[in-house]
Length: 166
Ligand code: ZN
Image 1: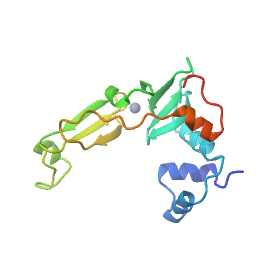
Image 2: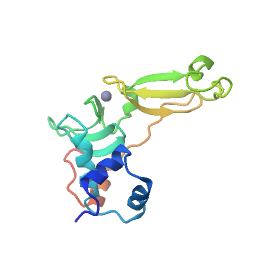
Image 3: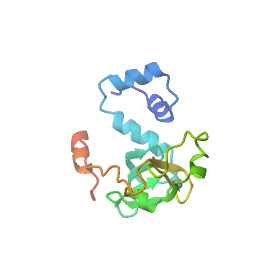
Image 4: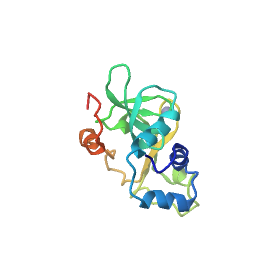
């Protein structure tokens, strides 16, 4: 039995819950149905049929592709970034804020970081244009690979059958 309703989980994902409820959900032991409910809520937010198995970001998911059972990363709009073990950022549109003019679009004058020390790299979906991530590295730093999920261990931990191609 689930402690929380699907509507509460949906409101949590949307950021519509009041802080007291969020705090309670964060601090209480998680019920067994939470993963299933969370994935249902994410699936309701997208038009594609590929099965969502993990959230990578607010609009980015690891999915099991229906057509060939491959595990790939997809934007909510359906854009396919390919194999989940590769860095999806390399298939994104990248905007680099690396000079005063670009920084002053988001900071008041003289308040921005010195771009010889720090730049911003913004990663956008090539299909729908939604922003998926922002990095704030030194200019020479390589594109960061934030996470490569260990799906085999994850599904063992969930106690659920894992997708075939992980
Ligand atoms: Zn997209």
